[in-house]
Amino acid sequence: MADTALTDPAAPLRVGSLFSGYGGLDLAVEEVFGAKTIWFSEINEPVARVFSHHWPEAPNLGDITTIDWGAVPSVDILCGGFPCQDVSTVGKMAGLKPGTRSGLWAHMATAIDALQPQWVVIENVRGLLSAPAIRAKLEGGDDERCNSRDATPEGATPRGVEPDPWHLGETATRPLRAAGAVLGD
Image 1 (cartoon, rainbow, N blue to C red):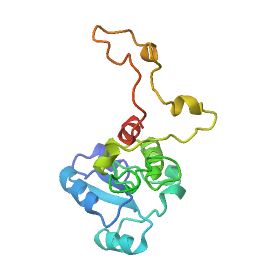
Image 2 (image 1 turned 180 degrees about the vertical axis):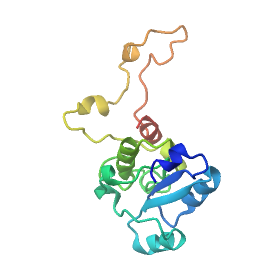
Image 3 (image 1 turned 90 degrees about the horizontal axis):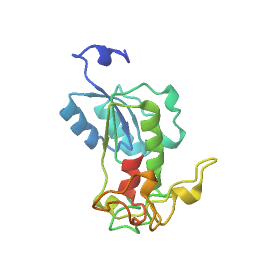
């Protein structure tokens, strides 16, 4: 069945839903893409019951931090609205970093990497554009490179790119913002 949608143009696209809530984003994704939600991930039990009422055949995979993505059915579309409390302009603006609720984005990025869907639909607040982002230190990674104050040191040619006549990208950039981290991931 998993390969049916890839070979049968009449089969609806398969949707996986993260941070599902009651399913508002899923309704929109299904409508726009002519798709069908096949599984979801939501830890708030009362809200998950509402979702299950509308999608009784879709299993709840539960806590996104414990999902084995190798055992999850593949999807064509992955959608989700990761927690916004730490990137919202009405919140504390703690940012997108490990240990924050908004830092759960890293688990969605892992799901995207593992599942390789054709489409990814992400919903979040405008504060994502201005909230800071701090990368989790990767095993064996260089934390200084991941979380440097400036992406390009003053006077250096950025990442080995030849200079251009307008001198774009040749000056130090601002610290990494949450939207940049999401798009980069």
